Image 1: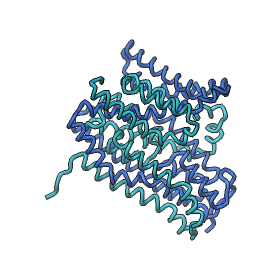
Image 2: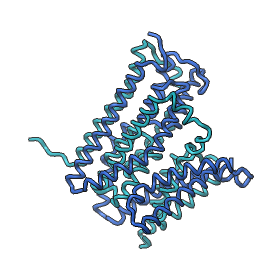
Image 3: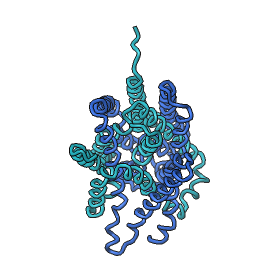
Image 4: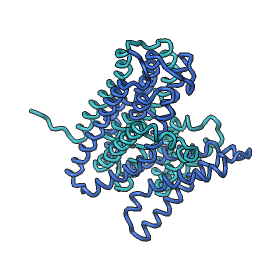
Length: 245
Length: 221
């Protein structure tokens, strides 16, 4: 059988797996929704959570589509579609594909065609290297959750601080990351300021949204403040980059 | 007699079944392609590719599991570790939903809010990618337009600007030390960049927990 990276059979195989993952998401959504209603959460509240999450997801999801397009140049569409719908991210998939290709004497970004054997090798490397999280959560997830719940029962105040501290620790790492090219500014390279200014625009929009909520009492602004600040920050990156790059 | 499982127990049972099933299906993709096209992997290429890729990502996955599971809740964790894009999408979605609903992740309401937000985000992401794949030919020149490239290159700063201002302003006593530490590290240590931010997340989390514990013990929180 002639092999092609965009063969319909590859789309069929990828599509079956993606359908299963979609079914998992629907299963957990329905399960949580039913439980929420059972413990007295209002339908309006649950709906607001769902709509806000959906709106917030659009821009990052479009960025993932761009990643599919980037990887499709070497690997066809089916494999990047699968990899970026399940577990993956652009940085990981690019590194895994680059390593697998270079191990076979190929150069990432310059591959015009792949044999079935090369394709299977790349798919194996990309799949096996990212598997740990999928099986480790079933192994340790319950113990970790029970630990958090028992902490909550022992000392409610410390448990709340503990959760906030985890979130702040994660956010502080990403705030630091925004400044990772900042030292170039000391040598006159202003491009390191671009992410910093984008972050400041986004933070400013979020603050304005907070002030508006207090001033006009429109709850919807609060619901959509994060997606609005995200889009405003991304949009500001266009003129800021043109100015500083 | 059939024992009735608690909601949390049933989430863990379903999560285990789903995650292990998806893992098996993922492994079947390269096996299926190999069988259909009667092609074996290039074992040398596979081994070298794995050696170059797996150790770092296996280590990161272990760290991420212990760091993110307590923040995502049970249902959210099972889903997030299957659908990926945790730090740049699933965790911010869950954090925003918890903040909006004013609930703690360790409560049952928090568990439900986080699961709904992450499930909806996963479904929307999957559908948008499907749409992108179907429309890839007309979309490619639009999404690859040079004018849009800076916007998509700056998603993380745009995301953590909005998210950061909410959480840091509400928890500024806890946030001052870790934010300063991370700023100093990322500005002055050249090895820290986009590729290493995942490793710095647990460093930030552990440091913040230590600072918070000291402040809590001194009744400063």
